[in-house]
Image (cartoon, one colour):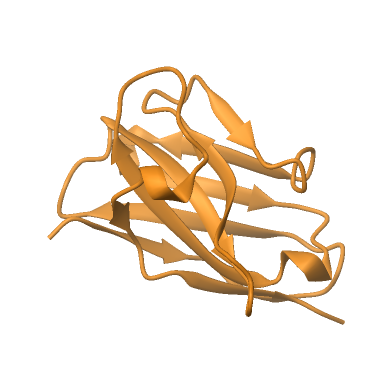
Length: 126
């Protein structure tokens, strides 16, 4: 069964940092574009960031630009999301997802992805 396993979520104060990890389980993700998505209570799922299969192209939602950084280590089958300067509005369940795609323009639309993880909770509160 193809899936991703997320980790690294938790409770952090405003202005703090977290690093989320997303590891492929049961397959190699080197041919997959990977995206991070989040869903807050009562809101639609939204794209946060995505990275191409070789790591050469990244995209960010305007709300996280300059604060979040996506990266990947294909030798470890893992994608990371470094989140700095966290705000209360970043509170959500964060999901990673993959799409078999080796092109240079990975999508930031969750509907384009078909392999998902279970999610990890991020809470930003004082």
